[in-house]
Image 1 (spheres, rainbow, N blue to C red):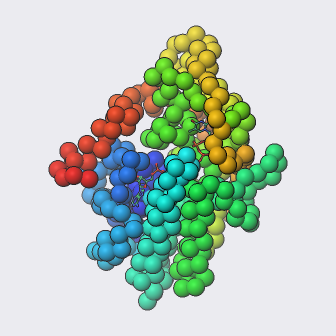
Image 2: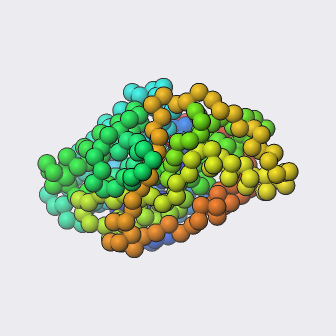
Image 3: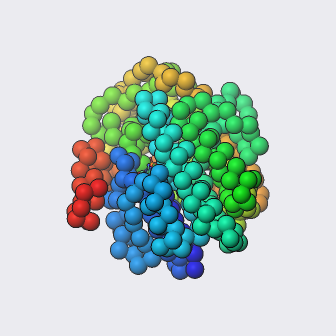
Length: 351
Ligand code: NAD
Ligand code: TYD
């Protein structure tokens, strides 16, 4: 019976991973450690919070004492590490927080895993969830894969690249069993509305402008969040130890075309006249050091483990738009900050 520590399980991707794992690993205990930063939202986990196999610990992955006590109290044998500061724009404003959580937090977890497991590394795994942004930026052609050299360009990407290097160094130096996956841009329900797709949905609902950085010609490869969660589960079960896996949607969009698709989907859903939402688009100052293009070759994952994305992008955008329209309270609570009250109500204490 596995004892899995999931970090950052109250965030966007982490909450989908927690819900999927409770279904797919019915005999495992899942311990979720989350600091509940602005990005952590226990409302994402409402439907499973009383599940008998699930434990929530509010805490910081940089807290060595707490991490040690979790490993020993729950006899953790598997770590699925998602906790991170995750937004590039914030990393440009506050790089130190990114280095602290993404680098030091990862190091604390790695070191605890090494100390707790070093007598017997069998049946142990440290799975690190990372991003394709560690590889830098592509021009018009080419794809990132497992063999692409690291070349991070933003403080966020640099902090994630550093964490990947520490994971691989712990494998090489101490023999810690690890897996790293590097995924492209995710979208879907429960994403914080600082990221492009939920930001556009929210701005349309609020009748505000839709800011597009530069000319909107930067390209991202988008993947539905549940497809990422499924890939993580598959790699956890069947991936090769000490390997890395590139995960992507084979789904490249310029920001401008993507925003127009979201606008059309919103107009249809809201019964607006064609073209209504697009009028809100405003081209604004470009992001500093804005990576031009990301695109992933996930053929290793496809060929070795038989993974492929389950949704066409238009379907995924439909699902996402409808989720936000049906969960306006989630969005309102996030925007007005009251989602952080949920913890106090549930646990009768201050976060
Ligand atoms: P998110 O910002 O939505 O969630 C991050 C979670 O980590 C939050 O719940 C937050 O409270 C928690 N957290 C932050 N600092 C913490 C700390 N010091 N201790 C404990 N918990 C802390 O992020 P996300 O988009 O869900 O991304 C999750 C992971 O996946 C990250 O590691 C990110 O780098 C990676 N990733 C994200 C994407 C994407 O498109 N969002 C793509 C590829 C990889
Ligand atoms: P984002 O969702 O922040 O993800 P990332 O920077 O990790 O790729 O941004 C996706 C793309 O959208 C990126 O090229 C920046 C751009 N963007 C805008 O044009 N306007 C915005 O308001 C935001 C948040 C992003």
